[in-house]
Length: 257
Image (cartoon, rainbow, N blue to C red; front, side, top):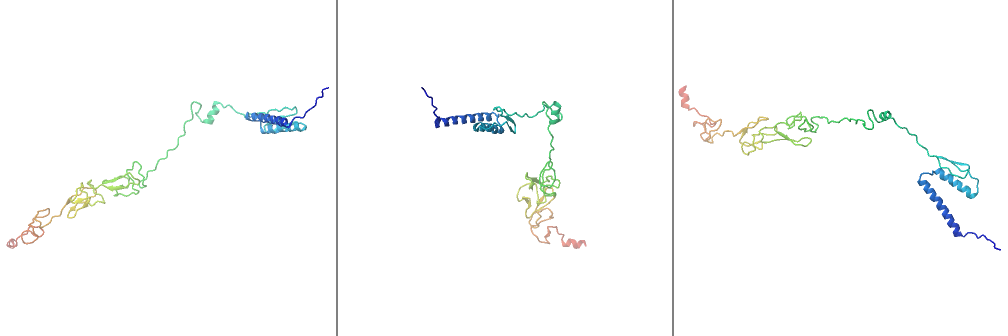
């Protein structure tokens, strides 16, 4: 007679089966979560069913979640309903009202014109803006940049802002900061570097050319402008006075009387 005996499973077998079961459940949950088929409520309900079965407790009739209901009275788990968002197909007229009047798929709305900010022109503010040719941060004449922000004659202004204007020596236009300007840059001709040389007198027309001459020197033996005579001395009563004027003899003056 053959007697069948039941040998209890070894500890290794039990642990192996438990590991396989847990791994299968976890794999299934990961696949479900990866495909966006299981929500948090579904996981909670599923865990409650497994716990009830393991402990021999009554199965729950239903478990509700935020996104739907999972019924477990028959032991099956239903997938939660997917909520669909309502949408509306816009007509051509509705699209025009939202995009903009006169716009459609092939004719976009006209670009919005933005106001163009222009710089205000103010002479004397130190900014050279056309039609200004200079702006030396003031509105005065006679300094190279006039009160209307125009370069004055005889001056040149750089490109700096504010403008720095300087007179041009030798251009034949005397400015207020020049003693003379004879139209050249030669030295020792009466006007050197727009400064009068010693022994010369120069005309000084503002805005015009200077003419420089040496004053006559009486008694140097040279007949110069303004002299009637020059006998190489500065004595009187010799026919040519000390002022280089022709003297009249005394006998001639007494006989005439």
